[in-house]
Amino acid sequence: MARMESDVLPAGDGKGFLAGANLPVVAVASALLIVGCAYLSAAVSLQKGVLFLIGAGLGFALLHGAFGFTSGWRTIVTRGDGHGLKAQLAVIAATMIFFVPIIAGLLPGDTRYGGLIFPVSMTVVIGAFMFGIGMQLGNGCGSGTLFTLGGGSKRMVFTLPAFIAASLIASLQMSWWQLPSLGVVNLAQQFGVVGALVIGLAALAGVWGLIVRYERSRGHTPQTRPSEPRSGWLLRGPWSLVWAGTALVVLNVATLLVGGFPWAVTYGFALWGAAIASLAGFDVGAFSFWGWAKSSDILIGALVTNQQSVQNFGLILGAMLAAGLAGSFGKGPWPGAMGIIGAILGGLLMGYGARLSFGCNIGAFLGGIASGSLHGWVWLASAFAGSLIGIKLRPTFGLQN
Image 1 (tube, one colour):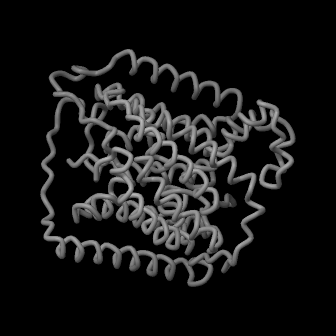
Image 2: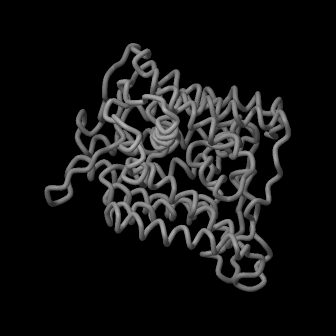
């Protein structure tokens, strides 16, 4: 199986169930997951405890499947290999089949579920373009930053703080960005549930077809990636993209059903930044984006009540557990000086861009398109354009293509 993120190393040789596992890391991650779930379930709500564990499952699947959105976009450009990008499209298609009817209110009962449906605007175009550049320089998207950090990536020690800082800065400046907008375009409202599914799935199939044609034009021949199962592979990895993708679909649908909204990542970063700034004495609540946050206590409380924040914490620990079981925790090298600069710059671009464009590869690309929102398609086009520039800049910062 092709590894999808360079910072995540292949697992050990598999001689015995726990041969090569990093048992201290496994113990720490397991303990934190148990304590975190128990605390959230008792002090906040059972719902938040469950969402924390779903987040852990997402991190576990992302790391074992090395399911990186960033490298999937890069390999189609640099090698003509669309295997990773096609896997992403398949995940979105499968998720859409569940999301569109659920969000449209077709489930029995009175519970209503929200989608990741946002306006189509120039801010989305600009923000997604920035994000596309940043994800290649940072060597990970929103979820990629979290799961590789959980896997012990040294690079993400620099990328994540920059991501958080820029997310906060962008949230404080949102009132500046009054640009032309088409408003919200919800395909299910415009064309009905069946129409939205037909249009969405046909569009995804069309992109898939373009990828296949491009692969052929580059002379790329799809290769069979033989699996090498070993004892305890489900816990120790590695997983195929099929296994990982299936897990992401199931856990994303579970997130929607349990939390009321799909899986998303980057608002949680802005919230973390706001909480830190408030504790440092900065009046975050004076800005319109944070008008509800009248005190640092409110922001601190939101860290364990906000769905994205809770799942982000769980995702890091789930990836940490997976890396510990695989014996790959912390095996990647420290970046050099230019690598650190690239990591910080990538985090800044991603953080600011994600706020402008209502999310990252998860909240805008996967969640937006799967929810039937037109803004998700605009995000994809703009972010991919930015990614092309980021790919060209990677060697400057010591990153291979």
